[in-house]
Length: 112
Image (cartoon, rainbow, N blue to C red; front, side, top):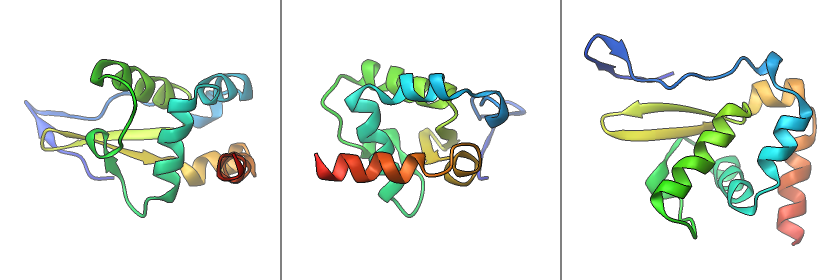
């Protein structure tokens, strides 16, 4: 994973081990339509996206909260490239722990 150094420390926020995440936490994170929108955008992307490239119908501070919830639920990995916070879906890890959930979520969102 790409990350940069800042003051001798890696600039990567903490991420939970996927094995410690329960289905309840994942479903609670995905209940919000803004967070489902973020997951959908990352699912469709061929690479990590910066927070600012995903158009959201909320303020910057609220968007930051949504990204935090998704990171804590194990759905996304965040890291910095320069001053941009990049976001990537933890797709492979997530599919191992919750097989079929992401494709089902995306298919449901596409039908809606």
